[in-house]
Amino acid sequence: MQPVYVHSIATRTPPHAYSQEAAGEMLGGQLEPGSTGQRLSHRIYRSSGIDQRHSVISGYLPGQGDGLFFERESGDFLSPSTGSRNDKYVAAAKPLFVDTARAALDASGFEASAVTHLVTVSCTGFFAPGPDYYIVRDLGLRESTERYHIGFMGCFAAFPALRMAAS
Image (cartoon, rainbow, N blue to C red; front, top):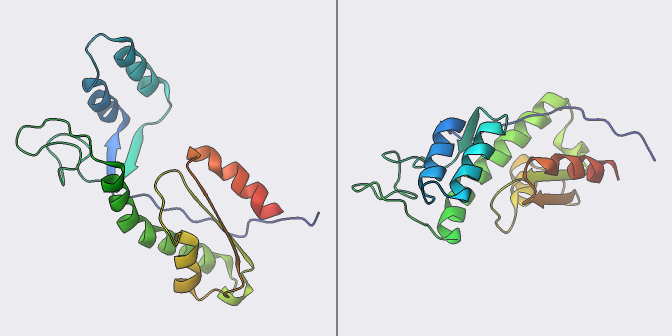
């Protein structure tokens, strides 16, 4: 096997940030008080090692944003459909993917025509054509660029993505 090198890395985070504590309190507040689920939720959020979460959703906490998760006036928790949540993801993910790929390409020192493979990763959401298509199109990569997308694996997806890039 030929050696594989990472020539550049670029990252982006969605614009809205929430403390882990606030996110945990929000979720725990939706569960039955004193229930096993509520106790487990609090333990998971406190022990995760995560300080802050990012989201494309501006209304992730009560009294904020677009009202996707909470009714604006009453503050009641809503249960938006998968489609509604994914619509938010798609609108925000396309530019995040393309902007991140552009930054990685610029930092690599390579021309777009030199890219032969593209591996993208997302822990949430999906759309077709996928982010790989928009990156190839918007960055002017060759149409023959081999494209792969890994989704729904959380942060762990970085490991199979690196294995895929090496193969």
